[in-house]
Image (tube, rainbow, N blue to C red; front, side):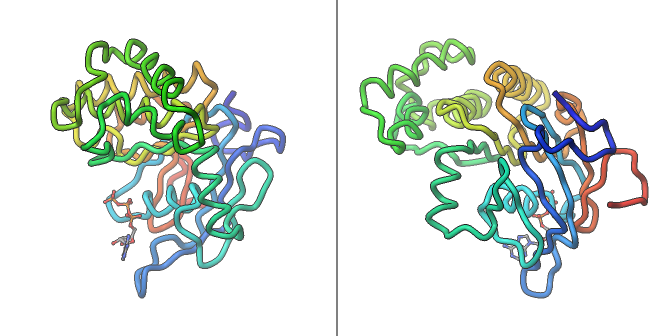
Length: 240
Ligand SMILES: Nc1ncnc2c1ncn2[C@@H]1O[C@H](COP(=O)(O)OP(=O)(O)OP(=O)(O)O)[C@@H](O)[C@H]1O
């Protein structure tokens, strides 16, 4: 499904997410300086690069969380950076899933209630939402943990619950920011393998920011962000 080859742009019909010449500064700090990125439908893309280079900022722009100062973000044929905040919020809720590094489970809720949350927020009734949430526990090796709260889960278990929550509503795109960053390398690799295999089963496009080459190796393609610009892996100094 990775169209366009390692270095090329994607044919129009496969394109799902695109950043065009995106610039964004925080006060005097330029975080993105003309970042350009294309992601195909069904593709699993890893974003790598040095600390502070703009990876998370780019991910947040692609996901409609941050608004660029200039440039454009497109999703599924539609420009999204100019949408009203309530429209972008609906887009995030209905079409995107999110996994972050830390602290994403609601501590007062059980694991199965956490997983059911996106369905409940989208208007599903409690019993069917919980039933659908429960199907994820066997799928991710979490049987028996449905009633636990986040304080009663290991880091790897909590990340798998977070992964189930991000995928339960079958989003078009899963945005993951250092999803294995708080885990030891073996547990991190297992979580990433589950992330990739479940996303592939559902046909979910994945955009994952990571520092870890072994995590990035699970992706179809890697791009490097340096000084606020994105380039294909191996492109050296010829930044697009
Ligand atoms: N909310 C903010 N306010 C001010 N500056 C910010 C903010 N968020 C990011 N920055 C700055 O923008 C630049 C890019 O940050 P960003 O978090 O995107 O980098 P990153 O590549 O994800 O880094 P890391 O790998 O360390 O998480 C950095 O110089 C950072 O200090």
